Every structure is written in C-alpha cells, then in structure tokens.
Length: 246
Image (cartoon, rainbow, N blue to C red):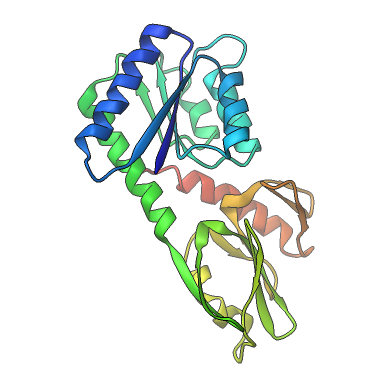
C-alpha cells in the first residue's frame, strides 16, 4: 500500500492535486495506493504522527501559519522519512526544499505528464528502499530483515546485534571480522561504519550533536570520539547526494 498525503490550503488546488493523484493510481493497475488531503501543515503533522507517517507527501509551499518548508522540517524531525514533492508558484524556495531533502520541486500549474514522470521516480525509489533486505542467520533460523528497518548495528560478544524499528535481532556467532560480516550492509550507502564494530543507518539519524547521533525514535547514540567528525560529514553528504531522484 502506497500512502500519499496532499497538503494545500487552497481548496481548488487541493482538489485538483487529489484528482491528479487518483488518476495516477488508476493508470497504474498494479499500484495499490491511498490518498489523504489536508488543508494545513498542522493537520498533516498530527495525522502523520498518529498514523506513523506517509510514503509520499505532496506539499504546497506557500501556506499560512506553517509553510510547506516548515512542515517538511517538522516531518524530518519526527523521523517521517517519506518522499516529499513540493508544488509552488515561485522558484524562490528551491534551496529551502533542498534543505528538507525534498525529492522534487514542481512549479504550478502542474502539468500532468511532468507530475506523473516525477511520481514514477518517487515510487521506484520507495519500492527499491522497501525491498532491500539482508538475511541473517539466527539461533531460530534465517531471518530476512529489511534494511530500512535497521537503525543501527553493533558487535555484542561474538554475535552481531541488529537494532530494528520493532525489535533487536542477534545473529549466530560470527567467525570473521565485524567488517567482513557486515559487508552486505556497508555495500548500501545508507550505512556507515563508526569505529571498529558499530554501524548506523543514516536514514534513521535526524541530527548529530557533538559526539552523539540523534535517532528518529528519540534515542541518543554516543559516537566514538575519533569517529564523530567524519560521521557528521558523511551524514550530511549522504543527504545531499541522496537528493538525486534518479
């Protein structure tokens, strides 16, 4: 299920965008999707927090009280990692949309063909992220873990512990180095090795403060003293490079 949120304070524009998204879903028979529309950033944020976020956000930028840019920033602070597409009447906010890691920035009036092309790229990215996984050998047998569910990983004794969004999973005893055992994770640009036996998923890091990484569940993880500066730089670079939609 692809969950899409539309936020625009103008009723006419909100209805037109909803109709375009509905048409897009209908034209993709294999795509199961649901669209919810909101007239304010506050209403969207309340719903996102209640429902655990959306996969895709279509946000107007110029809105009273809480702009689309401010709404996007709050979504990132909440750890809601869905893709954001901005709609606006002005080019003046392109740099701001970059700051909140927006997937794309479209000028109104939105052309259906252009929007559909951008949506294809966003959906492809969402599906790719959803399907990426590793298989871990545990005491109870092999376990498939989606990479987007892993917040961080560390060596605990002779096993590797995967701290996921729903639980912690321990591997069986490893007979190779931590780096070698964790190679499938490190092959993905979302994951960063911090020190000799600790890996963080950039997607779940909302900020870096001093020698600590701030995670999207409110947890604060201490970074090795020597690794903190490089991690902060790598985290920033990841989100800059991750902006490229294709």
